[in-house]
Image (tube, protein in one colour):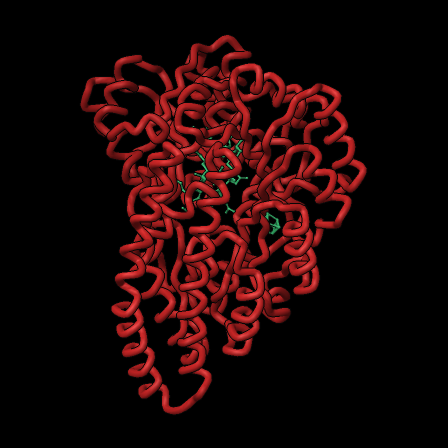
Amino acid sequence: MTHRTAEENLGLGYLAAVLRADGWRVVIVDGWLEGLTAAQLAERIAGHAPGLVGFACYRSNIARAIETLNLVRLAGARPFTLAGGYGPTFHAHEFLQAGFDAVVRGEGEQAILAVARHLASGTPALTEIPGLSTLTADGLAHHAPPPAKVPMDDLPDPARDTLALTLRRRSLVHVQTARGCQASCTFCSIVAFERVGGGATWRQRGIPRIVDELECLMGQGATHFKIIDDSLVEPPRDEQWCADLADEVSRRGIRPRLRGSIRADRVTEPVVAELSRAGFFSFSCGIENFAESALRRMAKRADVAQNCRALDLFQQYGIYVQAGHILFDDRTTLSELAENLALMGHYRWTVSKGIFTEMYAANGTNFTRRLSRTGQLLGDPQGLGNNKYPLTDPAVELVYQALKTWHKAHTVVYDEAIDPVSAPKALDPESLREFHGLGMALRSADLDFFALVMSVVSAGGPIERLRQEVAELTDAELSRTARWYDDFRLSVSRAYATAGLVYDGEPNPFIC
Ligand code: B12
Ligand code: SF4
């Protein structure tokens, strides 16, 4: 669980589908979607007396997974326990030491099938299962490299056991049309994950299969979908592919509302026009930065001009955009911050959850490898899978601390106000507009504060004096605006009541 609201877990759906196709009885218990405590989840698991229990984990939920596992064991059940997903893939040792019998690195369909067969018949041996890791007397053992990736059209459609729950929560129904990405941004876990499995870092399904799945889900009541691909229009997908998708959707007479993710350098007018015709009303776009030097450092394929062109086109077609932003990394400069402030102000209509953003240093990424090589890694004290590192420029550090303090003070209101457009929820256009308006008001307040901090720090002077001035400014602005934020929260509550939505996220653990 996090500050986000729950969404369906397509990974579990794919694993269940593959196991069922092989004749196994599978039960999916989605503790997050169902809002279960560890004790309730453990009771449900133990009640099925399973031979194999698989947990889908992030590094950040290892503690809850282990708590649940221990409760299952306490209830007398002794299943073989397997952990998979991004957390176990990049932190295999920690998951095994914490008590899992085995970890699957990378995609799980083939490995879980092999583990199920092993448990039933002893064959294949655990040590022969590709992608499986266990603890041995010698420590962590990655027994065999992950298997060759299965072509996407050869995978069954994911099981949809949690569809009714998802629809009830008005959370978008997830669909995957491709896995991976062909770019290689330094901070990205997606490409790191794809490299674990080897082979191509991107593969796709054909349009007929994609639209079949949409049509089938619409027949079960789904209207709004999140296409969870990390990058929708990877080559060879192009303008023609977008037109073909729109044609196929229209030929079937369905009108899905779609949200997707796209890289800015793949955005052209025909792409946006055709995707809009296919039903896309919202995109998440990794803009990341408005300074050329920062984009080059991140190895982004897009330059600043492409970022701006993409945003302009989305605006022209009335598409909501959640703009991924990474304001700070170890080498951020004051002039880069100034360039960002200017263009963030120009594009204040984009949806962003708060003003403070920094580059995550996740295990397995090129960014983290570089920090490790240069001795800059300061560890992961919160155990969230996000290593700490120092900033080079002390003046930048002042802006960093000020924006972080500001963000922390408002994190609850960001999460609640912006969730319905960033998650997003299945809302009618009017509610969506209302939540977007609330997000823009928050964004303006954030940018005003960012501008004030920049004006103090850019004036220059001894760093200790600047530190004092920034601290005083932050305190003064927090108290000056307190009343406005109180009123704002009332507006958010009213918008939730009008839309009939409930926000049930937890406090954000990542801002610390
Ligand atoms: C949709 C999504 C979400 C949804 C919910 C997803 C859910 N219920 O699981 C939302 C928006 C809520 C979300 C939240 C978060 N997410 Co997210 N999310 C995604 C996204 C875009 C797609 C996930 C997906 O469905 N993939 C498709 C399925 C088929 O793949 P899969 O889930 O990885 O499962 C496969 C394997 O991992 C493995 N596997 C998975 N589980 C298991 C279990 C077992 C037993 C086995 C054997 C194998 C196995 O087999 C599966 C089939 O091959 C991914 C990016 C991506 N491409 O995966 C990011 C991603 C996984 N999320 C990420 C992050 C960081 C988060 C947050 C921590 C963000 C935040 N700061 O709040 C939160 C954490 C939420 C939590 N529960 O704690 C990162 C993880 C990075 C990392 N190094 O750990 C990713 C990679 C995004 C990124 N750009 O970096 N996320
Ligand atoms: S474009 Fe997005 S998914 Fe692709 S490598 Fe960059 S950050 Fe990762």
